[in-house]
Length: 240
Ligand code: CNA
Image (cartoon, rainbow, N blue to C red; front, side, top):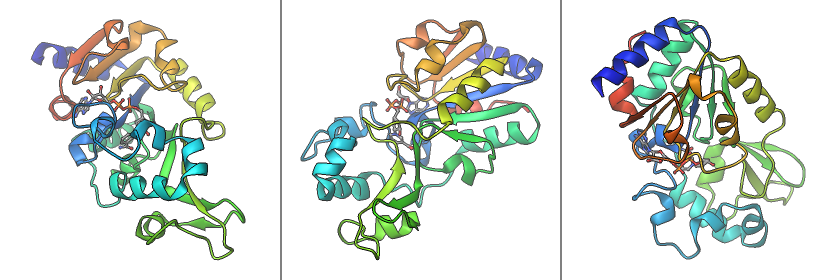
C-alpha cells in the first residue's frame, strides 16, 4: 500500500483538476454506517428490508415506518467530519480540487469546510413540506415525535433522493462536466452499485480513475489503480 500511496501523492501533485467521487464509506469513520458493508444498514434486521424502506413508494405508503427507520438509523446530525473530509477540504483550498461529487446525504463535507460539493442524492439538512413548500431544519425533522408535520398540515419530506426518485435538478449534469474536465478522479468508499450515479465512473476514461475502497467492487477491477484500504489510512498520508 505504501508504494501505491506514493504514486497517488505524485499524481495529486501533478494534477490540476481533481474530482473526488465518494459514497457512504467516506463517513463510516465518522460513525455513520454505510449500506452494503457487513455491519451496514442492509445487513441489519428491521421490520422491512432497509432497501425497500428508502424508496419513494415506501415513503408515500408507509410514511410512519419510513420515519421510524430514518430517525433511528439515519440521524447523522451529531457526526463529525473525519480525516478524509478534512483532507479533501484542504485540497480544495489549495486550488487542486474541482469538486466533490458525493452520494452521501450527511453534509459532512461542508462541515469540514468544502465549498463545491455536488450532492447527487440530496441532503438530510434540507426538508420541505410536500403541501406548501415551507422549509424545515433537520433538527426539527429528527426531533419530531411522530411523522414530522408542517404547520399547514402537510407532511415534511427530507430532500434526499429515495429509490425511484430523480436526482436533484442539474446535479448529474454538473457532475458529468466535472468528471469530464478532471485529470484525476479519486473514487472512494462506494460500492458503485447505485445508478445513475455510478454511471459517471463506469462511463469515464479509466486512465484517470483511482479507486480507494475497503472491498473489491466490480468497477474497482478496471481503474488505473485500486487501493484496497480504508480511506482514513490513505488520506492521513496524502501530502498537499
Ligand atoms: P455502499 O453501497 O454501502 O458502499 C460503501 C462502500 O464503501 C463499500 O464497498 C465498503 O466496503 C466501502 N467502505 C466502507 N467504509 C470504508 C472506509 N472507511 N474506507 C474505504 N472504503 C470503505 O454505499 P454507496 O455510497 O456506494 O451507495 C450509495 C447510497 C448509500 C447512496 O444513495 C447514499 O445516500 C447512501 N448512504 C449514505 C450515507 C451517508 O450519507 N453517510 C450512509 C448510508 C448510506
